[in-house]
Image 1 (cartoon, rainbow, N blue to C red):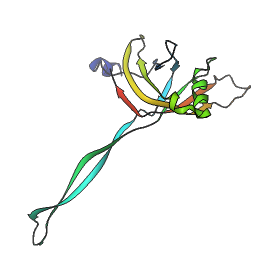
Image 2 (cartoon, rainbow, N blue to C red):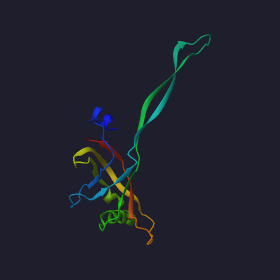
Image 3 (cartoon, one colour):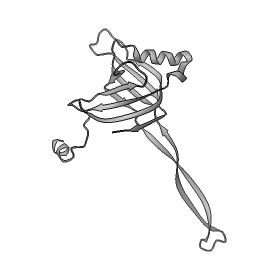
Image 4 (cartoon, one colour):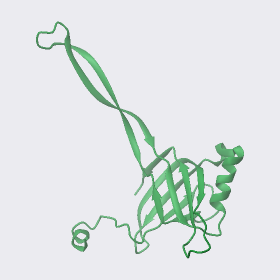
Length: 163
């Protein structure tokens, strides 16, 4: 692995990184840090257009059928963020405000920044129109020594890589 990283220094490794969530309009310098994130997926539908051309095809009396693929709608997946539970209630309050029917006012733009082991920003993803759709706390057991995990899924209208 060391030879691979030396050969391609631009490859980001996934050890010792964290993700910083900053919500537009927040008074906090950083709203939350996460150790797990999944769902970064943006896709584009494919539309197949079929048309009959005037070119004859073999012995057929009709024209040749040609299929063309063109780009369709762009879709963005929801993003799921996980972290060790903290005292902060920022995420819970955001989720709660949406549940109270205030979702249109709670839509936020923000960014997720990925840092390397040296605390240098390596990638920034800007997102728009995000709001929380689920909030989960891991199962609790007093017998275990595990950290409690907080998980939030957010609906995102659009995300784009900025850096």
